[in-house]
Image (cartoon, rainbow over all chains, first blue to last red; front, side):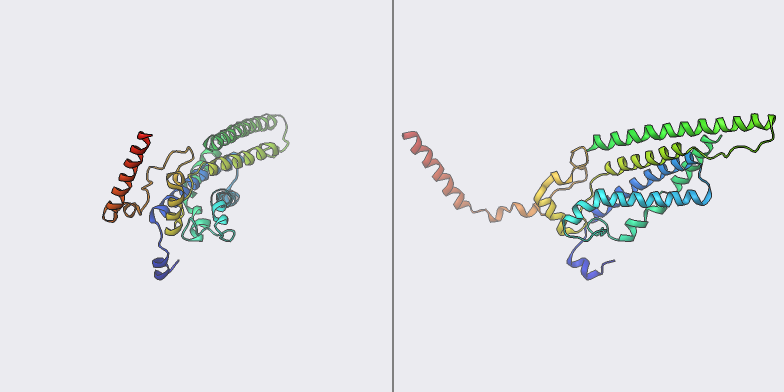
Length: 118
Length: 144
């Protein structure tokens, strides 16, 4: 987190922060439901299902970084895997999505598990 | 861009639906087979795991849909004020469009617009002189 002085020197545009986090949140909730569908089709149970979710959520974030953040971020001279051009905290970007989509994941996971193995 | 992401998502969705249907049929067949073999012989039921091609299809189609979804997200905006204002100054509305090319509804324009036109600083005498020159030039052209 930047200090008060740094915020005074280089101010933050609040609308852009909201816009970016909402974009990421929408993608993560949508993608989590999708992962639930495929985990149900695969018939995963207990820990393997959660590992599947973890792996694919991280893959989502990496893809989002590679396709949406990286082109402009690297062009403006930021180091690789640095998201400070578009997001305030790197933790929020890389790990914040795990909790966003978990409910949707479990919902579609159980639904499709039941549908396929009825 | 939006057509590309949408078509990728649709292709992945078709593959995923096909994988879902295949898994459904496989489990139905499996339960039927165990039911028949249980009555005929006492052989143990075959392993109920999915064939590897259905698993592969599921994972690959998930990845394809994911790619489509990521490509379909709205472009991000810089959060630092100086980067953001510079982008507005350089690109104007074109820098703040969604994938279809329409300007975002919440794009509020240049934050320094109020500084762009200041009537107090208009040099009215210079403008009058320029106008007079222009009129004279027109007269001169008419006489020729």
